[in-house]
Image (cartoon, rainbow, N blue to C red):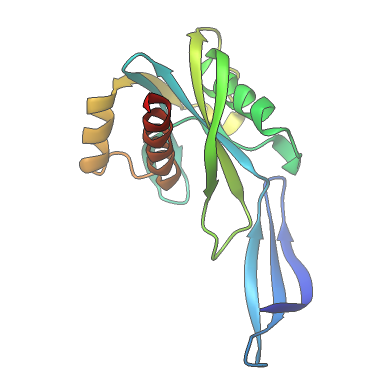
Length: 179
């Protein structure tokens, strides 16, 4: 597929939406809508068998959802992934990590958005004050055992695709390090 044109149709501090003219492999023309968002960091805070999650109201779904701390820099800024991970962890949970290990890349919805993310394992955690953004005022945070976390996935209480995929990356990371 070849891009033949592009125009921005919407922008705010978190994203832009563009409409691209395209030429398909068979030579026919079409359009493709793309949501451009900055890359994000997702953090898995791990203390022994416990995982630290945050719960917040997700406006597009109209639901509160449990997930791993994650986010982007304000105003679509490009921030180094490890720095962004430390920031999101501190901002949403108040936790600081002695060690942040990059465990993999996640694509949010590659048929819709250019946004990509990096998943980090955070260990050596110490508590502190959170620094939440205005949209995160009603956020809650809590520790869950891995058994509880997996049961929440099975029960449909955790449906955030990035959190579930990141947990898989964690399991693969641990398996590689045991070998």
